Image 1 (cartoon, rainbow, N blue to C red):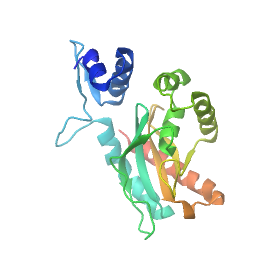
Image 2: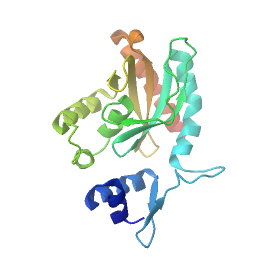
Image 3: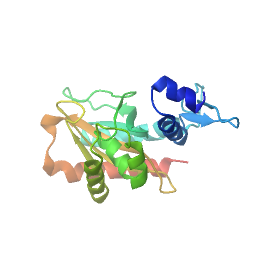
Length: 217
């Protein structure tokens, strides 16, 4: 479709539609053809096997996420950024009776989730401003301050921002070139979240993120 058609279907301005399509292209969800029309990208095209970044990340990360779950006994999610949304592409569940179940396939507002905040913090400030320029529900100055703190700490927390009774802690995953490509998060019932265990969880998450980076081709 053309930018004008996307704008009409979404009920937004052409400039907003262009910005959204550009982000979809960047993340592999769309491609722009030589005739300037947009079509589904590699991530959305069904195939028996695919080298799409998201599919590759899922394949590479899951074993390391399962190892993390065994060590920490909390569920783990793998998250990618799609515009202003955080998309959970796979989950490794822990065996505890009271646990956070699979969230694979869900999309949530990136500025509220731990993984989304880590990935937003890795973007240039001007990119974040552009993403949220038309979003009247987000306090952009406050978000900028929070992302600055996330960058300084190297981790992000979602304490019941997206779901009552759920707390999550996330760190970023980089490819071998140092580009932020995803986030890995521990998700747990709020009753088991203990501040004194935060350094341990963050350390385990960083070890997992580094193992995933080393496993990427």
